[in-house]
Image: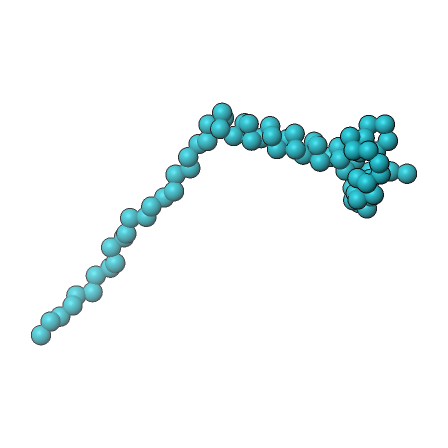
Length: 76
């Protein structure tokens, strides 16, 4: 007859993730690009009309009209 002795479960080793630092030279260009894109979008939504318009006509103004008012930009 086989008798099993009860023993507490042995602790298992737990793998702890170690954060890997990302060097500045790898993320800085992406941050600068994202900043320029965000500034460009802010310009298009907020100021693309009149004398400073990049795109001629009122097309961009009309496409973004409601978003200008939603974000608090006056356009009239």
